[in-house]
Length: 62
Image (cartoon, rainbow, N blue to C red; front, side, top):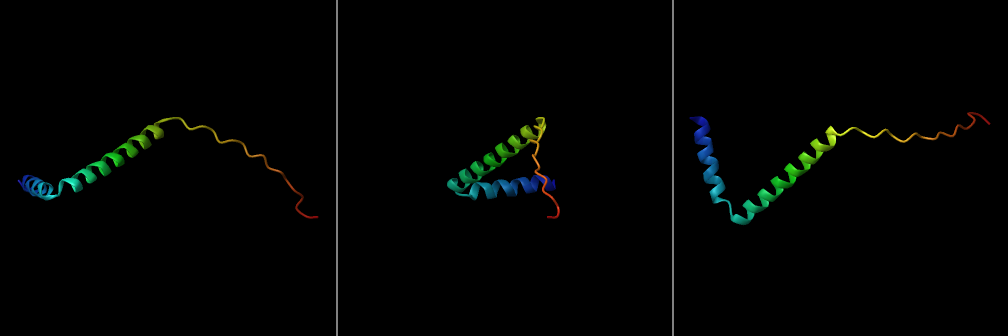
């Protein structure tokens, strides 16, 4: 019952939001979802080995 009351309250608040703000929030939410989906996609791919570093040793004392 409490979840139903919260859903009705949230629905009323969302209906009072101006259309432009609602569209902006939808666009922001969509961008965040796309970024997280891209991160999940990249996390599942095997990583490339790092390029070896060519160290040039110099004498410690002159």
